[in-house]
Image (cartoon, rainbow, N blue to C red; front, side, top):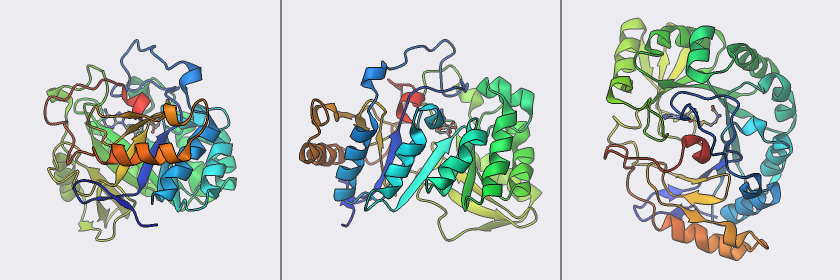
Length: 327
Ligand code: SAM
């Protein structure tokens, strides 16, 4: 099955699935300080509903899937869901994005379930700073990174959201940590996707500044082969022997050019673009009974609305917090 083509001529074959809006961390850039508007449990899609959506997506040409959240590893039964997702005929790639806090318990079960690709959010390697940014404990995350490497996950990437005045002093330590653990690291520009006061001009740190720092600190070799299916630009730091990705969500004017994604929120809203309010409710095709043909129709109509680019540069005001969308 060949991929669906969006109105801008881009093949779309990648679905990011948020399996929960709950999170056991409270990152500055992701959740407002006193956020408590968690979705009612009854609204969260069940495994069979998620798998029906995956089935419909595969039948339309989707091949790549990412499990995200909230924190996906706090969803009860998530390992079984990932096993079933991987076993779905036509699913070629399954990746997980996690804050890493539950990896000490779940890395081995995830590997045994067939997962091989994992992205771990890591905004600092200094414990105090990590806590100030995420509200969480760095130790299980570091343990989790070590463990996934020990177990032998072939693809491990670290994700760092850049915040001027918060973690810009950590960039070299993060690079050294990534090199030491033989993991790729990606630096992501802060996006206006969360209803938090973090998103000000003064906190924004463009990836170009990281690029300049890398050039001063190391020898850069651009990677011609893409690493993964996203918009990151990758370099190899020759001296450190580490791969670095730069995700210029706002500063890179070509960022959306090859966008191949749609997003599913944990309550069944299909979004054609992260930086746009458009969304389609898939629940009418799931409840009271699953109707796969209707799901396909809703996928096609949502894809037909996929914008050419996000609205982040146009004073975008999100309606939903990032934790409900899944990054
Ligand atoms: N809880 C998981 C985690 O921490 O990786 C998965 C969900 S999180 C919303 C997915 C990704 O979105 C993470 O890499 C996170 O750093 C990123 N993210 C969240 N808010 C962001 C923002 N305002 N700008 C850029 N990236 C953001």
